[in-house]
Length: 507
Image (tube, rainbow, N blue to C red; front, top):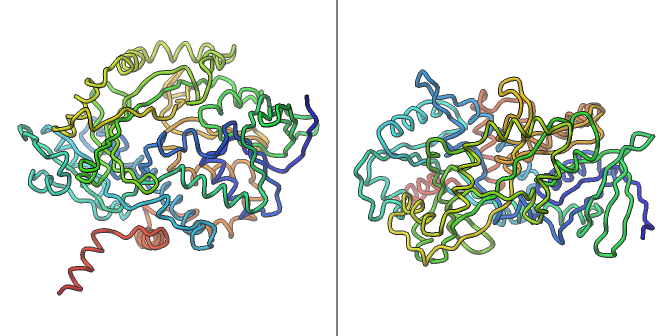
């Protein structure tokens, strides 16, 4: 039974961090526009944005070694690290604006200061880490990064990791106190609560079954309302598909040329979570290691302090897994259903190219808990099985496409905006660094899909994002000012500065 037809200006599919961010931008830039959000689950931020499905690192390349690859000549390429750090600075500026304008309260509910560290073993890796610090240290975005290969210093920095460790090979770490832990689930819920207070319509338990372009160029969505067991039709001038892994099948339904020859490869993840408060109290940092030779970037091991609600937790992982679902709450037929005549060759080519990845994922799926504990003990030598439980993380869908550099069926690691030629529809595909760069991604959507309005909106965008249109990596003074202002607004007091202030007061 169907008895509802509505027309609106903007429809956002998925109540995650991406839709919440785009909706928040549009309410600032075009407050009169009517916005409707559809979410298949019964509340916000339950898939990729959820705090248990998301590493919450606040990806800024402070500790992720795969963003600074070593070149054949031995030099360190920091291009990607600088780019990702700048993108996270945009997110912090946006959140600061919302806090300062009383649209977000209690920033400590969603962001906490936390040291970010990199840890390596072996002479070659220690040398790599030294070169990495040297390459990054001249840039203001990486101010305050410390390096040490002294076991006694490391015991002070990471007591849990160094406890009972036999140091029989070189070991080194970097530490930077300007890192963060971000609860993207809490942030998503806060943003959507505020949007609801601004008359944005949010429909939970609603699934988008189909998307079609109408004769007048608008988009009609066929929506299943599970609350009332009805089919509904909703029309909008602009549609954004921010449905995490579910974005690809919806994009394919639009029929736009840009949706052709694109596939998706789902990867699931597991974490070990510590339930012993005494162990949790011994660690206060996000510590990233180096992926093993031959392992994909998604497998970089890390031991993370997390602030989830009013509780401090400890997570280690990720352990990769495989499920044909595109969402944690998806269908076992998602992967098969995404294979179309236009992307069949692309998908087959990807399968041939990624035999080693498939083998790796199968091995990961078959691991026992004790095997996973052995990997944890490379980080925490005295880890006890009874203190750690397995948690299933969210599903990620890596983009597969034909590229000039990689050829047919190239597996992409990252996020990507796909938009129609006339800018009336856009979708976000891909995975990490995802949520951390939501503001950068949504600015890209605004520029791609609203080119005329974007020029009119520019003064307001610059009020929201003071560094908009400028390069922080090339402007040290601006970078330091922005970092100071956002740290103050978000309550991210630099622990080093706090300690220095305490020492001065005592003197």
